Image (cartoon, rainbow, N blue to C red; front, side, top):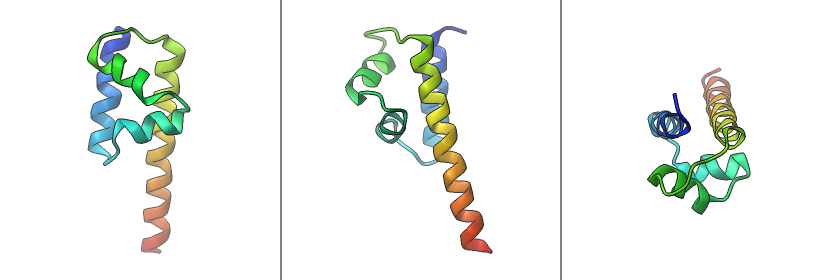
Length: 73
């Protein structure tokens, strides 16, 4: 898999979980405009940047699950 495939996967996972890429970018500490350029294919991200997005999305999802679990308890 190349980095653009990973970016597409992260975008799809974010949407499925109810997050937009602005939220994921912010959580990752990355510039939203730069992430947008990666999504559009205008530039290619470093693997470390893709990892930041992936881990940020994982944190957002985990936080949402934790919140929902506490609300239902």
